[in-house]
Amino acid sequence: MAVRAVRGAVQLERDEAGHMDEQVSELLTAILERNGLTADELISIWFTATPDLHSDFPAAAARKLGIVDVPLICAQELDIEGAMPRVVRVLAHIESDLPRAEIAHVYLGSAGALRKDIAQ
Image 1: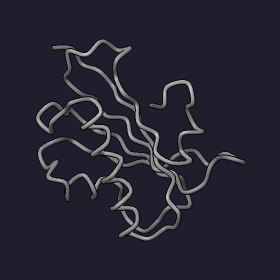
Image 2: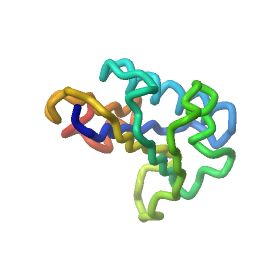
Image 3: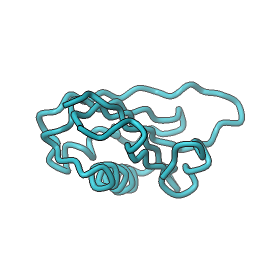
Image 4: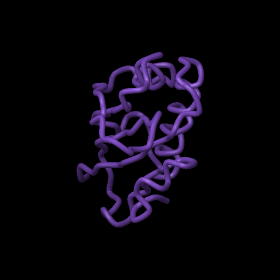
C-alpha cells in the first residue's frame, strides 16, 4: 500500500463556527467518498484557513465526523493580496493502492477556481 496525498478546498460564505463545521465536514466526506477511503486509511490531515477565518478550528469538523485517532493540524494560509477569501484547504495523507493519477482532489463550489488543473 502506498502513501498518497489528497488535496481539497472549500470557500465559506461567512465566518461562523457552525457554517465552517458544515462546509469542512462536507469537504472531508467528499474526499473520503470520491477516493473510496475510510478513516482507517487516513495518516494525517493538514488544514489551512485564510487569515479572515477566526470562528473555529477546521480540524474540529474532522473530530465531529469521528476522525479521532488521526493526527490533525491547523495553520494559517499566507495573506496574499487578491487571494480568494474565507477558504479552508485540506492536505490529507492517506494509505491507498490508487495510482497518483486516480486520486480525486476535491474543490467544492467556487474553490474549484483555485486548482482547475486537479479539481474533480
